[in-house]
Amino acid sequence: MKKVQLLLSDLAVADILEQADWYMAKSGRPLAKRWDKAVTATVLRTLRNPASGKACSFKASELRDVRSLPIGGFPKHLLFYQVRRSQLIVLRVVHGARDLEALF
Image (cartoon, rainbow, N blue to C red; front, side, top):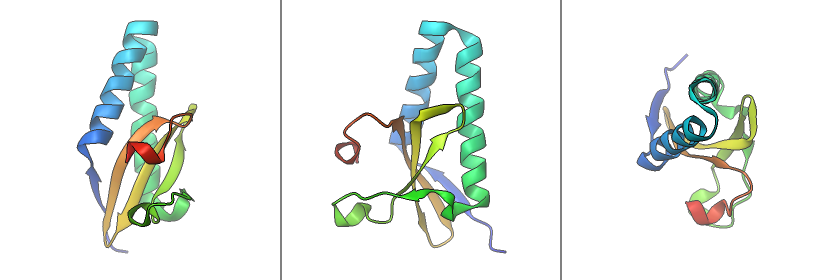
């Protein structure tokens, strides 16, 4: 089995950190830590099974191969990613109620 390399976009890193900061400010360290663990677990699960995410129906041709998965324990937050060759590229980690295609 070929090893899949993980790449996180700068936007994805910013999304994860901003949400952790928001949870820290609103609810404290326990929720922020739970968020960090949930994101990590979702990324690891995706690395093990890259085809597990739901194919997105974005109109832009460059986004046609984007997939999404909910963050465990935070079902309204979605991890968006692409698989290219042997790379899993995490594009964004955002709340699903946003104008998603406009974020890319």
